Image: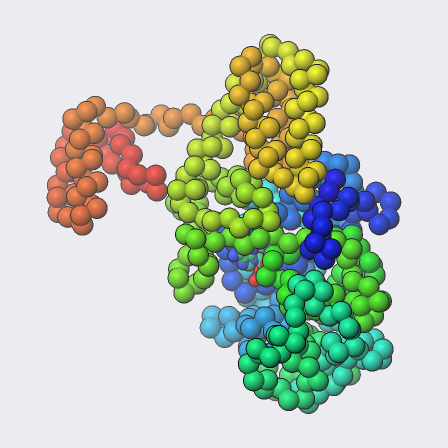
Length: 463
Ligand code: AMP
Ligand code: ZN
């Protein structure tokens, strides 16, 4: 199995550092709002990695954090804490906000068949571990105190920035005027911040009351659950330049090497070719997709259609084709169920080899899907193909063997005249001619036909 390591910029042959168990860490959600489909794409990628590792026979010790403190609005060291901001807006405590959105996140990942990491750890349960980590960095001379916190001294690491290969000189020249004049370098980052009295979330520390920096959370929990050096660290590409760079710096300060050997990053999801953002109203949630008539697994199948290191553009047309693609795939698979044909051993071996080669080549799931489709379309139907598909679904996790849907009993196929009326009503609605639309609906009702508006369009049923 080969995977692409952002740190080396190469595809590397994967082998666990110790025994047969893969120790892996994934940056989890900041639980201040609903996860959007972009966030969830990153967790589908994380899950594909889990599944491919398992398929290859490895055991898993996988930790994912829940960030419920310390992630500031800016991703850096300034601005309000994201949790505190939402708590203030919703007139709740940050703990209530965290509990609500954590539960929501778990529901979303379950719906998407994303396997739950063996260890799910909350930042606020590990404040002591974080303080210990910071104390050790101070003792080793990698951190210093200012009037508002404890900062990591990146000047102590000649190769700081190696993950993103950022040019610090350029960054510094282009940076906005630094407000914090006590920092030794503009890219020095907070490990711990001293809390003003009104700050809601704060804990005792050797430096008075305060709260942890976001990056130290992952380092401290990774160390606790996975040890000084583990196999794989995952996250979205946006984590590369600041968050993961700083996680690496922290571990280097303490142990002289990055916490993980392999760093893997999922590319972003775009919407209609652009950035997803709350102000544009295009940060869809799984609930919203379900309201529009999609199954969560339609979204998973949509994600699997692109390699995790490529950007994926979300559109509703794309979702529609994923939905029908998955439906057709299940129908094709179902046709093999219980069929008497025999799949010759050599043919089976070559299908399996092609599938394995694709997934083991840095998780090339789109290519693996091509192999799956090829086998599913096989002219002679055979239960052997069905069994093979079940095995492949351990990796794809799209419920490939789900029974194809039967048309609802009350569904009614309109005759040409009725269809013309339905179309006229749809046109009237589109033209915002509500009176005409209602008139046609009443005319149909008089004929005993009821119209139901669904996300896929209008459906006619016998009243
Ligand atoms: P957050 O909850 O903001 O910490 O983000 C959770 C995860 O979602 C992180 O790993 C981010 O890298 C990832 N992420 C954020 N926006 C997107 C996006 N548009 N596409 C894919 N992943 C994203
Ligand atoms: Zn992290």
